[in-house]
Length: 342
Image (tube, rainbow, N blue to C red; front, side, top):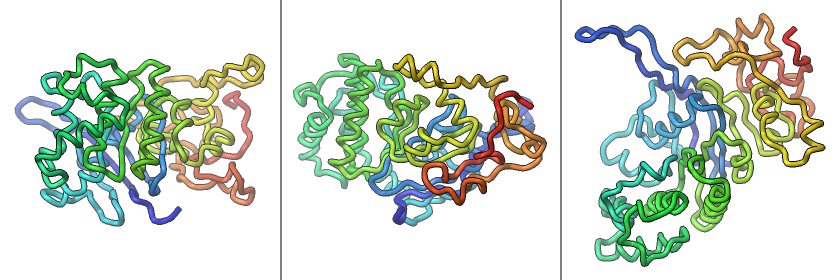
């Protein structure tokens, strides 16, 4: 990869847990994001997948500065943006925009579509002359497949898919270079999901966008992403290309997730081994020692409780090359252990 447009290193976000009313005492922390590293290339789509509560949305908020990291660095075009404030932060925010998950709550019901899409111009007046803003809003509505004549309508007059298009138009208003899409299709019907994903793909080519696409549906991520990162309990446990993650997954958690993806072909479905994970996801306030997936993993051994696995190409796979040789945070990636818990 050439120099990435966005580079995240050692990113942490811990929320304090306190006890008491008048004199609050810190008694622990919620480790929402607990050491995340990744890079996003220009024009690339990086998908981030994982179960609810694994920290995906917190990563999104950190990237657009809705939250401040506990520690770690976010570099945008080589500049560390984690400590910016005031005008410098405002300038960066213009180039990194967000599309929110729920189109039913992310749009102000008291504002017209024209006001919603044009609101970024009120915050960044240098982005468009005041007399030209309405024309630009109409153009944006047309670009995302909406009727520009509906500029004076309110959000409740649109369907869920149309509302998400409004949110996408708002995200495009300032001509950003990076779009952080936080589960942008999870609240939509399946048929509408495909339309929105296809729209995002077209807009990426038209506006030279880089996407961080967050979702819990592996099938949706596969259709839009160039690379995929799998998150579990605040960390990325495996990352690689579409071919690597879906064709040769090496982390047990990724293998379990993929085994649950519906397969339309009955023959292929009967031949596929279904991996059933035992136990619940541990609390982010009390993560397991060593590998945090070990409490649910059939490959777990004593080493897994003592050593934190590093996100790197596993030694048994380093000389193989090809789809198998990609970073995975597992001591036994590439080692064949039967699913028997022994």
